[in-house]
Image (cartoon, rainbow, N blue to C red):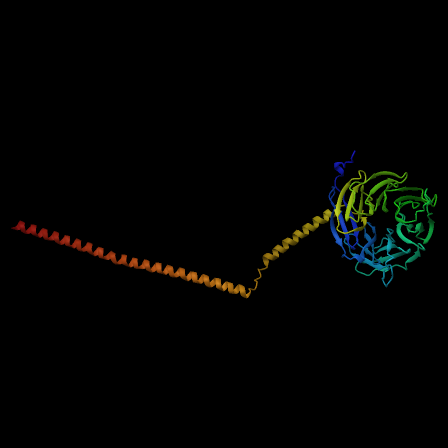
Length: 467
């Protein structure tokens, strides 16, 4: 039956992943909030430069003054602040000249979590190894972010191999022992305090056909943080090998996985489960006690896997590679939870286990409040400040003059029309005024005539009566 993710496992838990690519960029991907959500890219640090490809990375995600170390293709090692990307210190493993040979790139880097003291000044210890086996153990102090960092003492150096190429370098959980291996270089365990080799593996015997498989380690990891005696390696010949230095020099267990080279191996906190990725984009989990395949992760990639990391707190693992995707899987169901496209070929990946998602939410609310205050202040300033008059160009002035002239002509025409109308009205009014008195005069004349006629008639009657 197909595996189904229960509703409570949908989405990605609050995680913070830092990815590194072939152009030297560092991208920060976060899934924020208490509830499960979708991870997104929140920051990108650095400039695109193929000569500054990140070859290896290590993080010390302590709560106070966390640090991130990256090794680049040009031989420079940089110590950054994983919260904001600020550079604390940088140096070249090739000395003051800084000339990086093409065949002697940095192949391993580890940033120690051990703290020298609890004072205010910050410090770190770095382990680097090149392909030719030049191992360096260096301590650095940087009391202030604004002051120059200095080396605590001269670095310890030794040669991890006489010939071949070192391709794998790991430090155990106690940070007292290291593991090195590579092309034509057998796996070896070194004591970091004494800088001496304490164990070396022996090549496996020939197979049934009498064919000897040359040594070519591509990845490795310790099974437990408390025990450096058991470790697992991956080879170019698609083999997974389990070593126990307390029993024998040859592998205790060996099995094949698909038909392409093993490119990355990650351990689970339970101490017996491992996650294996190869060059054909296959990702699976194994029980290393028996070599049994527990299952393959769904959501197959389309490019070679370059890094697989198990989150120390949440039940998820993440992988990245040449297909430019950061993929997050659920450990129990082996289902793909989320995939983020990051544009460049990815070379590495680390988790910031100190990230909870709640702090960013609080920080976001504070930032939003501050932005609102700033916007209100800007609005008040814009209200107070009078508008600035822009200087008019010659063309605009000429156009304005032409428009104003046209308007004046129209106004003059309107005024002339109004004046003519007024003159016409005034003539009519004069005529009316002239006609009105003539009528009155006629009426008066008529009334006088009628009066005179009445007087005459009265006189005639009076005369007749007298006669």
